[in-house]
Length: 237
Image 1 (cartoon, one colour):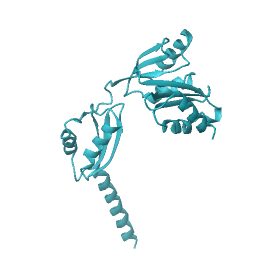
Image 2 (cartoon, one colour):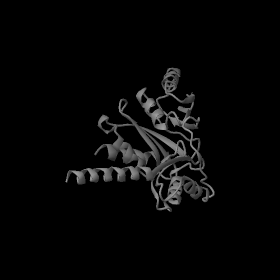
Image 3 (cartoon, one colour):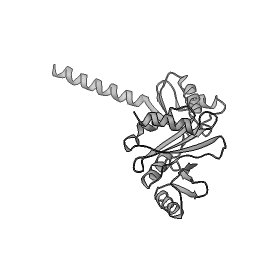
Image 4 (tube, rainbow, N blue to C red):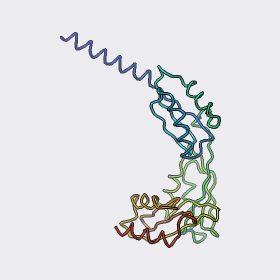
């Protein structure tokens, strides 16, 4: 009986080891993959092979990490699937490579030189920052960074921590911004999610310390007056 038990344990261990040996992971750069729609198309192409078990994306790095059954498909086969799309051709991913990304962030709290200095000091403390340029005239900050060392989310959170409420900034005349004071209890991630679901809203963010809500919205799809009313209904719940 003891011998059978030992054999069973050994068989289970060997089976588990074989499973790990067959489960592989491949991360590739896809430089043309710039948005969620692109990621959806890449996912569809990869999922056409049943050996693909899971695909995760990092749009800032423009990478796809593919988990697959190595006993059924090879990394070269998966790369060939992407190459066949014509647009989403893969290239090797190097975690030490400098991947430059840039963004503009609107922040109404940027009022004077002292605010600019605080932004400069705060953002330059983040590893991977390449450029920080506050603009007092338009109350926004332009940021360039290495996506292999930091992320948009980290930059935004740092700005919140040092007293700002950043949201996406665009130069288009079709885009506007709203800045609203809200109750402290409503300055939460839940409020951000509800506001983001509103028609015409491109981005939203809150600052719990300042009790503020900032919104980036599309003029053709909504108005500031309409947003104020909708926000009032959300934070009044």
